[in-house]
Length: 602
Image 1 (cartoon, one colour):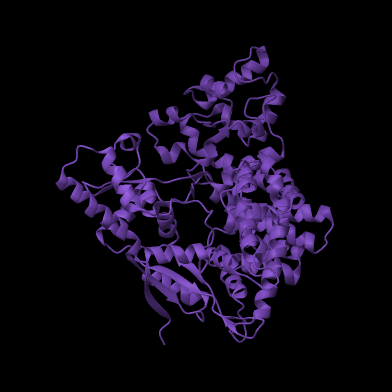
Image 2 (cartoon, rainbow, N blue to C red; image 1 turned 30 degrees about the vertical axis):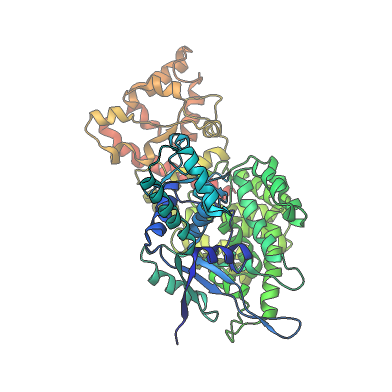
């Protein structure tokens, strides 16, 4: 049985379907990632009569109306959103939202004599020979009047040139009548079938985001009790992710979306307009994932799409009651996610673990599942002190075990089911027994610190531990590691880079994790390219003489404590290039010990 149908629709008709809501795109406000030159090339392809690829839609199930008749489901856009947005921008003159969530126009200019498209520049705008915005021509009610105005601006044209302009503008106008292929996937297909079809059709092999399926389903849901339910829930998700990154975007919502302004959702998310913390800036996929896992105790977003499609997992048939309940449940999850009190208390817990900056966490999914844990424990009614403890533990245990770096959905699915079945305390204890044994702290973690990259999660975890313990930077009596990270201070080499390079060592040697430390810039300049035994002994002499050269430490006990806090072996006073490997091995062990003490104190 064929699982799709193929139809041809004109550009004009396709845009009409979009504007009338017959084809629903997940979110027209989502950032447009194409460069303007791609929009130009798309218009040129249409002008030349070249194909621009298929638009792929997936039909919602038919819904029984109150009068007993069946209403044909809407088509939700699966692939082609960037092309659709480009057409709306170039043909209809609609604003797009750029990667910074700012609204702007994309102007595509056309030269009738040269039959050439370009993105608008100041020089083109000043030239009378160019039509600076093709949408103005394509939208006009009188192309003859437009043509007369063009000739008035170019009075020196010959009759031959005028004839060519007439023909090329007629050809330009025909863009609206050019056909675009639409692949309509059968409503009975499930998410796995749709994904497989997409991958096979899309020659670029772009991975299909199942969250976009979910957003399409949300956008197109119009229950009898509230025809705008899906549209406003979708906007709540997208507007929250916009505001988290760009708080000033709130004024755009208030000014331009009067319909949404009247909903309960705006009041739930308006607190973000005064929020500048960027520790956790979730996008729409993160919001969907956390809300779904917390409410449905499932980790695979494909299951959410099935539920929002009203699929009965046993019969695989459409069930309107399942669909309605799934949307109401998801709404509860979304409102919990965007709740100001919940969100801010979660951030406080994260910061209390020493994670004060998003750059200290490599994986957004670590934060996502930690927030899921926090919201679930709140829902389960655990005491606040236990909620804080277990949320912190889970956050850091996820980093230590690199829990969501492989197959995050499958791992999250298992984790949430285990937590539901056995409770958070038991699940953490089982992970500790399996993955964080004594052997891990003494051998496994030490091995993980044998890397040569500043972005390694275990190096970041070491710095997080230093923040947690309020450690001072190397050789400092007052400036903390936390303060240096907050002002985006630099990480420096204990065995100076230039010193090691002159000894013939390469990048993989001098950038070893165990050679990195937070150090004030002026101290690093003083260190220059000296051997450790040279400048460490100068600091020791500073303690005896009181003549400050490196930082503000003025006694030996303070210096030794500072070395301990920075996991630097005391043997460093005697070390030079011949001891570099020995130094690295000793410091890895000290760093691992500090991380262990940190985790066990959470």
